[in-house]
Length: 383
Image (tube, rainbow, N blue to C red):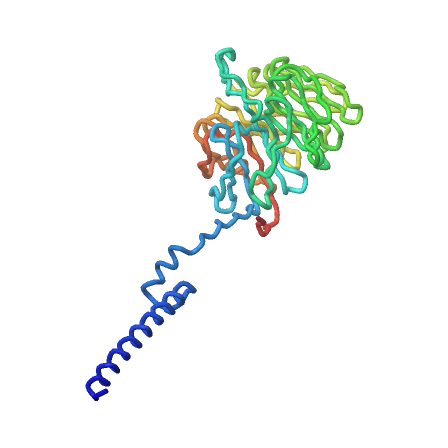
């Protein structure tokens, strides 16, 4: 072999070696890129194909207002410190009444498959109810999501929780009954006939009694849980909507939407001791009592007002226009603010109690109905 051939062969060998080295280098480069190497061009491709992390779970606020939205079927979570909605939790059909467990970790929400029936609507013209949608939604505030739905009986509207948190009490509007549901098992332990169109349901402080309003009968029915029976029915004004108690449980307050009154009831004798006239045109609905028991707060629906009543004198000592048809009302634990759920305007009003003025509004879901205030420690969210 002459020198020219050797040089030619060596050139071809070097070319092949260089090509192999380049191919291998490219492969290593691609491998490095696939493993997050430093090459600039392929890095964007690696980012595009990387797994997408699950969105972080929003922790429940230290001080929060939780609002059921009847029309949009969800729960708005308002951080009181920032006055913003920090989470929206899907619930189901027509969430209305809402209650919080004694430990502040769980919310119970009445869900109903019955179609809305505003005043004046012929119920015979409505579509049939979806009974599969009836239940009590359970929201875990550590997970910030709906974790289960308890059986409830038909058309639950309002829910309350037992003192020990083991049971919930449900007003079944279209069945004229109140149901007792065991939280752990989901079993309906018993039910009671309480009059037509029951709505408000509350547990009497310091007693094993549940009170339920009957809109159609114009009465509030009292259930003794230890005796497992109805022990009284107290006549009140027409279309009673809710029940609030003094902290010691000695007195109950029942608003009459169509009577523009609040009936004051002695819980020991089960007798009405006074009727508070609220003024012409007032349509009282939601009620809440301050932690010190000195004030009763009453929303007035289409009358737009939040009224403040002195519980000793039974006089109206203040009022403020809260918004469009305020229904649910919640009070902050420090007694400084009231929050009203204003259905038609899809917002919650924040009311400074000392000055009796609206200091802000927060847009929520469609058709806000119920509201609770929960003060709790900041927790690390779980998945």
